[in-house]
Image (tube, rainbow, N blue to C red; front, side, top):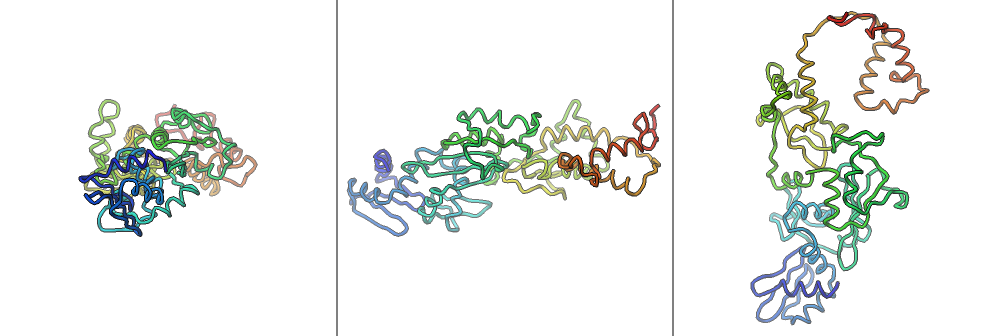
Length: 387
């Protein structure tokens, strides 16, 4: 603990104002200062005596100083997110009312009890996963915090084997392309590249890195915790579409909800997006499709979903037709397996020499040679309207 922290404590405690945070309670009366912890009470203290008691309990005082003079404003999204990263609630006891600095998660409130347990954990490093990010919080000098962000797949990697980034703006480049160098239009897709880290981050910088890689997730997470997440469901979102996207509104004629169920299953599964879908068909009609288990919520159908839905709306407008194909049972099963493999994104997992796998490239090429004509028609059966 440094002199600046002691001076800040003295300045914060007056006859009118006290300090009450994470189990530390300091007040001032005409008889002097009173310093209280869950297992300690000292009263009638002069300022010098207050400083001596504070130096004997540096964890509580430095913790208060960090959260009030270094961290963002108490109650803000950034403040609560930093408390979440530090797993404050894991070291607290539940209570019926929120105490000073209490951390509430999904309706549960907490009253801080023992800072020492949390400081011991910070000495070792406290980890939190946020999407594909692994954020580690460690204790720095005088109770300050030090943060590192890396890919969760690099959890056990040696720091020297990872590319270290010192500029927060580098997070934009980290999140821009996937491992094949393709642009990532959906930032919440589970396609974030690994092999990097952001070390020695301040409390402000760590939130900037997280929000750059996963935009608006901290703000929406906080709104949800506070009970004011503004969810835009499918129906009202589609009603606002215009121009080329206005065609999506036609889905609400006939099989509207059934189409949307398929959209949610196809686009909003954990394998495709790390957000937890909170939007439904409309305010009164939930979707049966699983919304996922992500840490941060999805409050409305994103532009990717709307764009995909536009294309599917056009395709769904076609009339069904019957086709007759001749396939062996194994060939039918192979086509089904190819669809599953592509849909699950597992094409790259099929080994070139694994000819038993239905989606093996050579097996698929062989099936094409056998069952497709020179015009690309399956079993030589053209689509109606084809020449």
